Image (cartoon, rainbow, N blue to C red; front, side):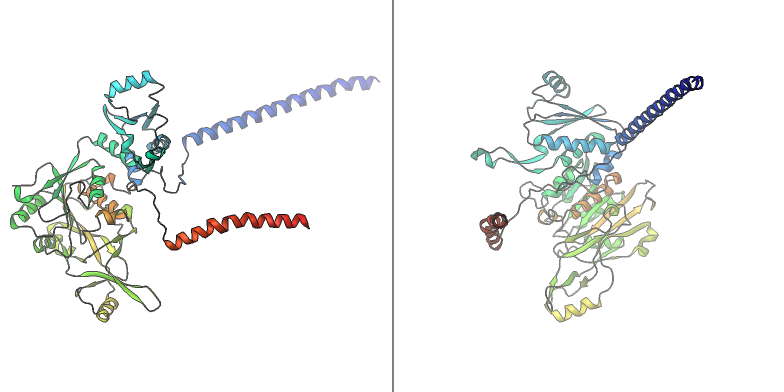
Length: 501
């Protein structure tokens, strides 16, 4: 009995020690788990990714906007004055979240409801001199500010108001408006792009311009157009940093060519889109002096439309080269050049001694051939010529004089871009295939030495529309009147039969 009484306390002591040890182990494990959870959440809060799975990628920022946000040196503050009943309030909030994420801490956003927080709204309205009741954003950067109104960020249809419906948003273009305002704030003074007129080029006047989309797109990048009639000038104005010439139908005079050459010799920048059908020997001669010869031909291709049927088309499917900073972001992207297009012959060896560099930007896809007898209807001859063509056909090229071939070295130089097609920038073509618009945007930014803004720009906003022909309407009628009611009827019959059995 004595032995039993002496062993009993030891057993209880061991049990107490075991319980304390187990409890301590559990406590340590809980602390470790909580610590790990805190570390994982902290890491996930600072390092996370976002994806936009919407049909039209409404909130996904473009490559150009992301590249611009990377260049911000200071913080940008965005104050949002949107009432909840504004149709695009949720869209703007989601878009600004993407800006904050892409800005990596350089974008601060404050949301203010003017109807609820009256004192704060009045304080900021007085600070930024806001005098409108419309919902808007105020962007503030380095003491400068700019407003972006809700009407600038969306196309709103009011057609349903007569039937008691509210306004309907047909196209959301918030990124274009916000990024444009940001560029204005950061760069300050607008760059001036000269637009040459007087040779039956496409007019810039609103309402009649066939290049209105291009004009708006370029102006959104903190660039203003200045029309230039070279016959009225003694020299191209000093504030004009680059000149754009789109599809002149008549040739330049000797005096105009002298102004253009003087501008080039003074490290000028020129974007030249030539119409192959126009007779412009002096302009073509100027380009030829710089190592780019525009040939008197037309690019064509035979497309198979049936088992033994071929169709001839002059619309050129082409791809962008990836060796130039202009087209690097568009490398291997395909686009369509409508209308007539000629081939270019590049002769870099001929002009290398003059410190002129020539490089291709766009080449036609395989299968195209350059036909010199482009007015003929002889299909046999055309097919024979098509079989003999097996060389790459260039339709756009870049020329640089002076400076450095190394892109990392920024030295002033003369720059020229020539394209043997002038119709691809017109509204009816560029709204169908925005790659051409991105190319022109990249070209203009390269000419203005703004390489950091070369990239894939925000898409041109277009309302979603669809049309049904008679056959499609007939099918839709059968689906609505027969198929849809038939499905539950068949299911109900099967259930009834199953229960009956």
